[in-house]
Length: 343
Image (cartoon, rainbow, N blue to C red):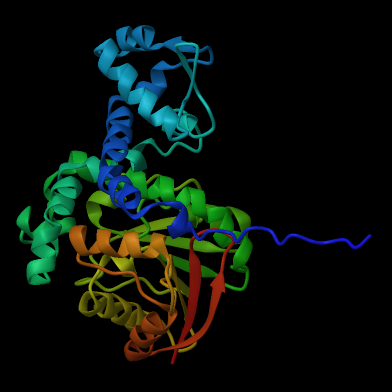
């Protein structure tokens, strides 16, 4: 008997699986879940949920909140995979645990980041950026995002902690991808609380580190090694310390091309010929679609005036500043390492 084979039905594309009106609805409503996440992180709700499950009423009493409203907000987050909801009780899962203040991998400050008044207002002023080309933040403070933080220490503290939490999540990938052992002195420029430098120095006993950032940031930094010194200053105005290797982690993308070029120029003036610079950040693809980098790019457009760049675009900035780009190293995480040598 002859055997016949029926071809499987064609696989529908992602666009076909999500009908156009559903796609528009989902993206239009994404702000609701984001705001719920911001709020739960801001209120510290995760800190009040112990190892045992709790009802919304129990949590509301602990937090001093309205039971019904909290239940509805937590239910939405649970539907998105943050917290678990079962039989009227909420319990932690691996995602909601990151909203706890005492979790060593805590991302609570990062979840609060876009709800800071300066960020939220800048994002809602995206229309200003689209109409004028100037970042939305200039409607909040004409001097820009970082000038605003200098005047609002409470928001600056959340921002710095959020950046430290984000860096902590990526540091292991960077250490696994790049060999820091050949260098004697490493300067972390705009390094915040110094988490990357701490990790590099602890993994490389022969390395000494210099943490460079604004005075108000350095005042909050507590390096964990006596092989790390701190230097306070502004990379637009002050000379950078001498080092064999300069690291800029998620710094260049915060600034437009002119300011980014000025930062790279400051590094080149401090570096000896043959000195190395690393730019560690998410890279935009040369071609194609990358929702993560495109989201970050529009966020930079609204909040800082910076942009996400391709390896070619970063290479051009480095070349103009007096560096020879040497290689791009992809880590196993979202960040890449762009290496260049002073000429």
